[in-house]
Length: 303
Ligand code: HMG
Ligand code: MG
Image (cartoon, rainbow, N blue to C red; front, side, top):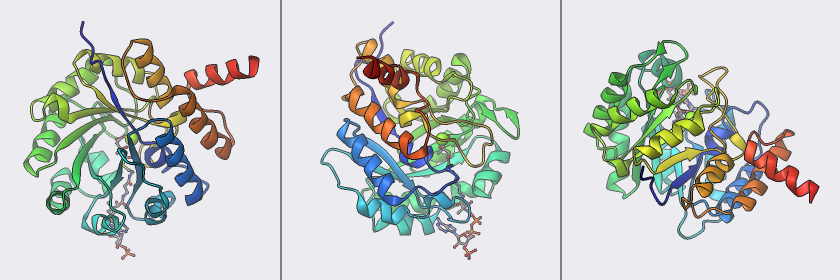
């Protein structure tokens, strides 16, 4: 078996990780988290969302957070933009990449972005065209790629359809998301195979929530397919406001621990990453939701 020699991780903690927090997290804390992530060696950070503050109050400070970041050369900053209103608001903050997000089930599309899959593509098309005209890279996320909280099982056909539509409107990269973390390795591989019908191996990433503890095996299953780009969330923060009961993304610390143990390079300093996770977890008043971080923090206390 030949695994990729390098993996690129996108930390989505400041966005996916914090979007669901009930208590407001001040912009200054979000900014400090981004700084700590980039200091730990992350080269991609998903910072925030330009969405309706009525729908997701925690992301209402998107412009303030983007304006406060000390940009580090070589680091790329992405933001979610579900429509032209969000894209126009995002432009002033000079994102390197924008993310449009669709769903592989009609039910989730309605709950998350208040429209059908077909309508979502009509909203995204001008966003993608405007972004590309300005040289901003475009990513599309396919939510509920293996399971939906409203519909149940999702077949790979749902992923194939969204991948095809995303390709048609010019989206350059596709993120395949197990939003509720019910996926297991073969199912996730089938979703990836559906995405690979329209996107090249180098233009696909995995985004696995860890609700059922399957995110690491799912990552390993995708590594076996040669997929080398993944989203992860420091300290395992997060969840989606429209996927009740779903927990955060796989913890970045756990993925980094696994990859380094396999001799796969990430460019990330695990100790500094653990510090970043501890910083935000301390602020939130809880322990990091990461086995590797917990073990390493316990080891520090014992030393
Ligand atoms: P809508 O209500 O259908 O939109 O919402 P609308 O165009 O009818 O506008 C209604 C109101 O929202 C208007 O304001 C608009 O101005 C405002 P009003 O006149 O009532 O005062 N509005 C906006 N305000 C700020 N920014 C905007 C914006 N657009 C409209 N961009 C909309 C449609 C998509 C905006 C809404 O449904 C929404 O914001 N949804 C939030 C969805 C979200 O953020 N979900 C979580 C992120 S996705 C995720 O976590 C999944 C992912 O991690 C992958 C995975 O794990 O699956 C990516
Ligand atoms: Mg997510």
